[in-house]
Image 1 (tube, rainbow, N blue to C red):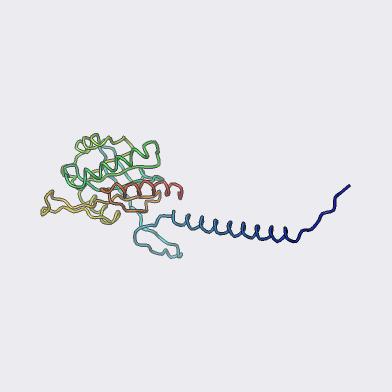
Image 2: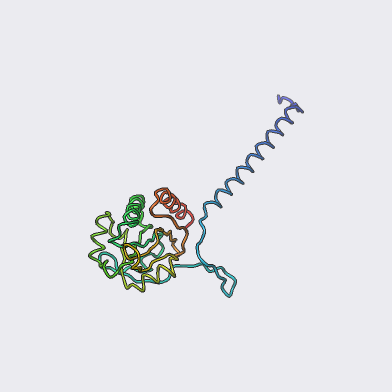
Length: 221
């Protein structure tokens, strides 16, 4: 025999309020999650233009061809579909370069098993920094072959690349103690060769953020 269902007005009101509270909680949680996801999107750095069709065109690292410490050609094809960190240095630098290279060792160690992340260190003193010099410097910093490239080429191509593509300083200046001025920045480049972050390569906290942003960028890709 079926028992009659008794309608309890008090229970109905309680359940109604509980349901409303859970719905409100769910909506707030979704809103917060959406806000967090927006924060994870890294900015695209550089001048933006519009194509004739109205699409946004972002600043990108152009084509390049340089030699690494093994006398192998490294170009935009090398970084195709890769995330990479770029910087400028020179082998005899005794000021910021050792600190930057030590921090890049941390980056390499964090992503040593990830073939999708590379490091490109460009010399600003190609007259001295031959492939042999760069190889010795790379070994001193435990650089892994095909993971961390130390690059040289013509002075003009390197300086133009720094100024026009990576948007950082790289100049020869005999008035400085070491004869060169270059940026201490580490630049995070995405798979489309766009600059997505700039970090102080001598600051461990900034480099921690760089490594976190690489992880976010991998998620975005």
